[in-house]
Length: 316
Image 1 (tube, rainbow, N blue to C red):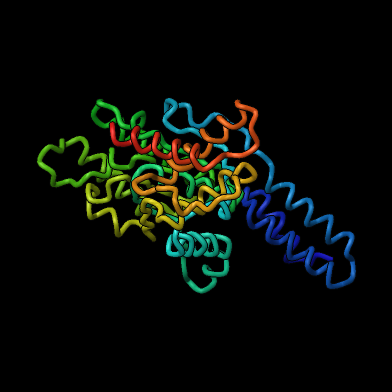
Image 2 (tube, rainbow, N blue to C red):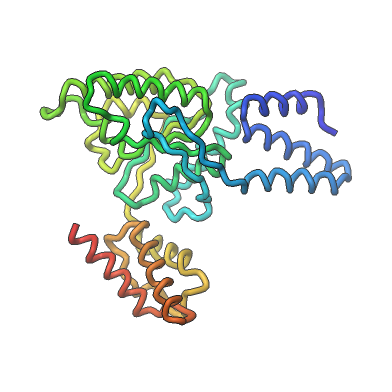
């Protein structure tokens, strides 16, 4: 049976809209019931928790004053599907663990990592990582569209930023500032304008002052362009690279699934392609097989689709 402290925690997490804490305590109760020999009730609790994890997040209108600069996206990516090196996965797992155990850290005067900077070429998994965080933590995913947030009117962008950070405090979630270069550029660059410097200064102040329960993520394709003052405002930086040959093969295996024929993939050239390029090439190959009433993607078709992606990339 649940203890008084567990019941109080369940009630508090419900009214705080803290789904992760609620699920954690529910699973603790299930584990206790299982130890007491109450297997049926333990299984029922676990099934209820698992069912809540698969619930699709309904799209809801965000702050209307932000004029559509924030979108709520469906968080459906799972950590197991991320093809990357151990360094990236270890950092993601550490952030997830600290977030889930943040109350334990607070008891020792410590804070969990919750302001993260992601850097790397396009299509290497930055947006996917934000979706993974939201899915694993059972939080809504909000994507900030920088081109709509930044306006030409003096002072308006800073006002929008203040509204946004107010919402970050009020609505717990995973907030992704995509294409962060739009406001995070080096302040000393000669072609920079005074208004952009003010916007960046405002962002630096707000992210430093932010004490919310949300996870704030900034993603950039050009780490070298970012102002150096940004780095100390983030709790962690995760660098992404184009997939190695081994990672490319693992990604192809993952995406082709039952459509892969009986052949080795070591002759498939993925060099220069991003994770997104390889994924799309595999999907194109599968679609071709389906439309031509075949069962498997043969090696030549797979090579052709990879070459097609490489040629498209080289003409950009």
